Amino acid sequence: MNFLNFGKKNRYGKQRRIEHRGKNLRISRTGGAALRTQAKVAGLNVTANTRHGLRISSRVAKNTQIALQNGRPVLRGRYGRGATRMNLSKSGVSVSTRNALGTFNWVKPNRSSVKIAGIQLRGKKAANIQLVYLLLAGAAMVLLVGWQVLSFLLRILGRLFSTALHLIASTPYLLDSARQRLRNTRIKTRLKHSKQLFEPPLNNWTASDLQNALLLVFNGWGRGLTAQQAAEKIIQRHQQHKATTPTLQTNSHELNNIAQRLEHIRNQATPPSITSPEVITALLAQQHQTLTQEQTVDSFLNADDWAVALGGRTVLQEQLLQIFADFAQLRFEVAEAEQRETNLNTEQGVSAALQQPFSQPVQPHQKPTQAVVNLNTASHAQLQTLPHIGFERALDIMAMRPITDVAQLTDIHGIGPARLADIQRAGVEL
Image (cartoon, rainbow, N blue to C red; front, side):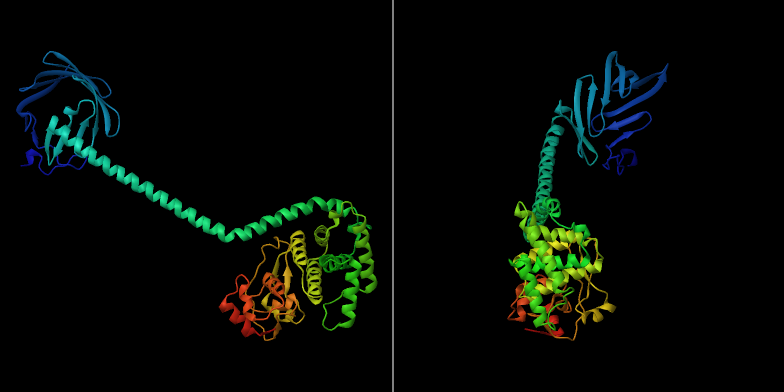
């Protein structure tokens, strides 16, 4: 049975055509039995076949052959790569495509072929079988492409939905960030004109002068008061409640002197917007960069502590805090654990690095302390001694005052029931 090609596969993995091809004998279903012999004479291929007669052929170009078949000229060729090729034969030019069943001739369908289980069919039957196969294969291809397109669209929709949810969730932060950048851009355009009003020049102001100026701008202009009124309130508060007020790192004479300078600058400004509290705070923040890191942070926190002591921060004061941190390029983070407990006793525990804007503060986990913290009267630094309370959350707590229920802390972003329980265990009161 081996001579009939049973069990033999072609290069496409299909059963070979069932036939016998011997050296001189060929037997097939369509061609019957024939004797043939082949020889090469003077560079020409000479083939004699009992069914087809005598053929003399020669290769004239790549994939092209010219022959004489029983005295008639024949030109044959097959061109192209892949499944689809162009055919040149005695019947003319045609285009055929090979598939799993055989070959379909697009120009002359009746010259198509089909091979099923090694049995090869040609002619009209083969063409009909090929057409049915091509229709089924085309439908399967359309379904496959449709499924791939649908899968692609579903993935795109999923990503768009995920992106939309992310944008919705982050919109408040994006808007705040955009407003902050726009505000700082407007302020920057006025700094040069504002700086020219300072006499003596701002570069000649001492560290104490800059700290006093920030204290008065923040607690005077930030509350709608003049610098002199702020100086009077601060001095009076310090004299009457010295034990419970923040540190006053100056005397009344120096504070009043700076207050007069600030009001003189404000009165001669044209237009008044170049000496607005926001612009002056930004200018002072930039000048604070000439001081040491510790002096800048101390000036910032001291001004804020006085705001709490004088009745809590206003909305404008909260904006001034952010502006100062932006223009001073401050980033706040909790001090190392070994120093923390010592610093807590002195209402410090915050260090700064001139690395990135205040708008991206670091909020590490806080170590609980045994001291009871009053949420309504504690200073900014004292609030940070509580677990989970960093720089920004301490500011949020101050903005909520007066606090009537500890559970109100869950309104702050990042504080849930578990963290609230940690804070209560650390010791808080109202």
